[in-house]
Length: 232
Picture 1 (tube, one colour):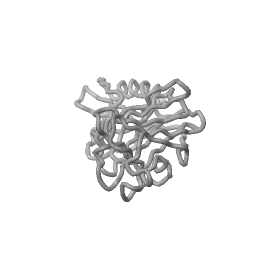
Picture 2 (spheres, helix red, strand yellow):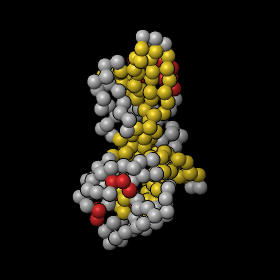
Picture 3 (tube, one colour):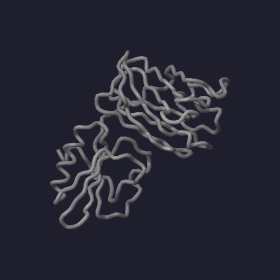
Picture 4 (tube, helix red, strand yellow):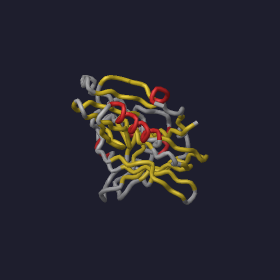
């Protein structure tokens, strides 16, 4: 199991820009690795493990993750007492491109449409190219996948120019008919240009994906692109 499903990606440590699934400790590399790998294999959100030697008789494993910022999970490569093991993931595909989308409101309805979130354009030079609600309580964007899928993860591209901090307290849900389940929650706040990957539990299934700001009474929800990846 250890050799067949995981590969050593680098020497180093996970960054802090993620939300860990679990942390476990043991007296040897082998014991902590086997325990952590067993737990990781049972959770679709687990995409990799960091195993560090804390001292001669103590090893620690951290499993990634509820959410993470892409490109930053392996930023601390100089910590030679750590190894990162990447899990071989199932093949997945983005099914959100050009699917019907709507949102709770639009700040500038002529330009800032919900369809901007699924137009397959991931670089937004200004606010007019984003999906952008008005200021309101719990703004939302909903994507109709037009079929029922096992949803593995959702990747949110924040706008690149300014106001990146508006992306916060973001709950992502997946619904099939009247049954709704949580994919995940990103507390934020994000910064300009962030790509936030939220990983769903293994049994997340549905045909509607909704992104909604949960906290505060006067918020905007604005994104450049939303990609919904399903297992194939």
